[in-house]
Amino acid sequence: MDSLIAAAARALSMGDPLGALNRIALRDDAAALALRGIAMAQIGDLTRAKALVRRAARAFGPREAAARARCIVAEAEIALASRDLAWPSKALAAAAVTLEAHGDRTNAAHARTLEARRLLLIGRLDEAGHKLAQIDLSTLTPALRAIHEITLAGISMRRVRAKAAQAALARAEEAARWARIPALAAEVEQAHAGLDAPAARLIARGKEHPLLLEEVETLFASNALIIDACHNLVRARNMLVPLAKRPVLFALARTLGEAWPGEVPRGVLLTRAFGAKHADESHRARLRVEIGRLRKLMRAVAGVNATKQGFVLSPLGARTVVVLARLVDERHAAVLAFLADGESWSGSALALALGASQRTVQRALKELAAAGKVQCYGRGRARRWMAPPLPGFATTLLLPAPLPGG
Image 1 (cartoon, helix red, strand yellow):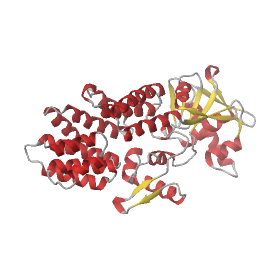
Image 2 (cartoon, rainbow, N blue to C red; image 1 turned 180 degrees about the horizontal axis):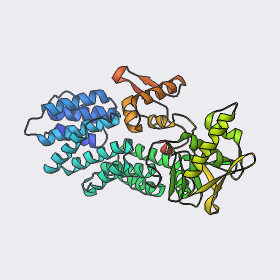
Image 3 (cartoon, rainbow, N blue to C red; image 1 turned 180 degrees about the vertical axis):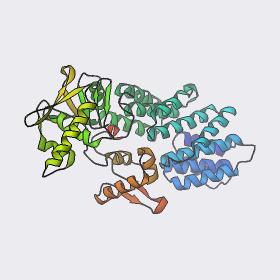
Image 4 (tube, rainbow, N blue to C red; image 1 turned 30 degrees about the vertical axis):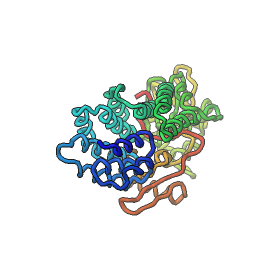
């Protein structure tokens, strides 16, 4: 490695892409192309960065397997930054193995961290945690250690484990201080802000107030019967009644929970569950059927008792009843939560992260764009979507995730 390449590499490791470009901007050898690609990625020109890294991979000779593997890792990092979540993870895994075989354990660990971050984005939290557990922490530079801890914190936040997230972010902050990279320090600070912001609303006995993620974790450990509108389920300690695929039943459960300990008139239930403005006998018959289904599903945690005017929720074990609601009652809140990370997303990447069809996501994006909540640029496959950050609160509970405690 010549002196200019070495100096450019040091500049990039310190988060100084302009310093790196000053040394290698006019060179077209393979190593310089790779470093220029990484520098352009740090500046934010991801399209140019991807092209340069691919040119570098082709320019390295057949005996330079480790160098080509590093290019694959760099391209994966660029893909992650541009929210291209469909890039081939098998190629990245093979690159990690190659780097390990050539003694480059640091970049091998970086490859595994990138895959963990991708898995976190698409909600595969178990796999992301397993990938991180494979990494030898002694091989990580301070910058990679900070990213590793930020990823751990992200997994903990999605699982509503605030204390574990706080501990991970404290370690990330310490590593970022050693790394002395302003962009990395800003990422840690942003994660801290998300953890310290309100995450949900608590509705109980006709009153409501915001909760931090730590308070949500405490609520989940309490003896309360929780109508969880963030995950569309009913929870009592370790007993879960999933209702995500039963929207009518969940609407009934939430309405009963918001009114507890009072009763809910039948007309209110008909409006909330069916949207019926003028109920007839068929609506009332359907309500009886749906209440019977809800009563059967919830029999282990609560009763649904008929009254003269309507129905009332009767929790078992003298529990109190609360409703945990999103801070934003927005039909497409999950789409907005992903877009609020400040990155530009393609429709296909959003569909992959949400576990939904591209057609469903495109309909949601069009509705949000018509309401002025998101904006797009580009055309066809190059179209990208963005939204301003959601001010004043975290998006953690807006993101799709396994059931709490899962």
